[in-house]
Image (cartoon, rainbow, N blue to C red; front, side, top):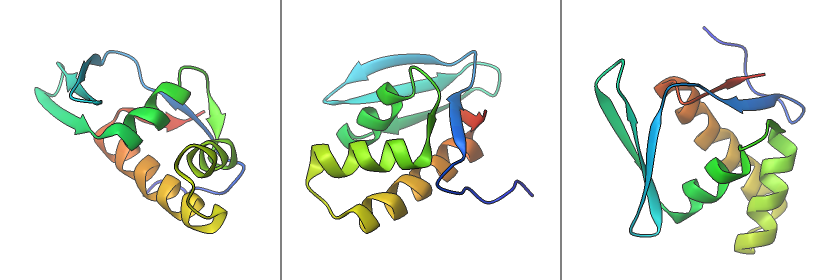
Length: 94
């Protein structure tokens, strides 16, 4: 079981995914596992921010600033989303 994410955990994109913008979000394909994941506009915001590794705190701050949600909710949402990316194999602790 992976370590729980903390505010200081650095997150990086995994290699080998094919991504395509679609309807405000992004569709990503993992050709090695033959599966895909569709991200909404908020997911796309975080994914694009991961062009360079970033901490959970950095991603939560961006989410709060761009969507207007509270810092606490942004952190909880960012952790939940990043957990999903890690589970899918699209991101990893750096």
